[in-house]
Image: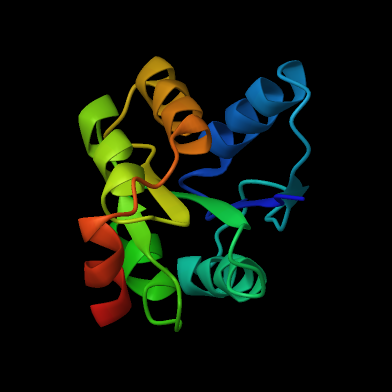
Length: 141
């Protein structure tokens, strides 16, 4: 069964909480790996937590939120078998799944509207990897 792991830093905390509400309304089970408040934290600590969980099974996915999405993305991609994609609109999100088999989405809370971020999460969770010619490229990563 697919597991969804969710985390943020202090800048992404409010958006992470909004995403949790969205997932709860959709009856989608997830695991919140913190933080539990807006106190200042270091984003790499939380990106590593999610990446370590996601890489244990090929069907697990993660959602990471920080101010820009960039720091979380860089950190998560340091892990073997992680393909984190910084997504900023519906097309980038859809292509990250279709062509790159992204297993973590990173979002910038300071760059996206709440509505756009939730739409990206929805697309990310509901788009399947296309495979085919893209599978060969994924193996080269």
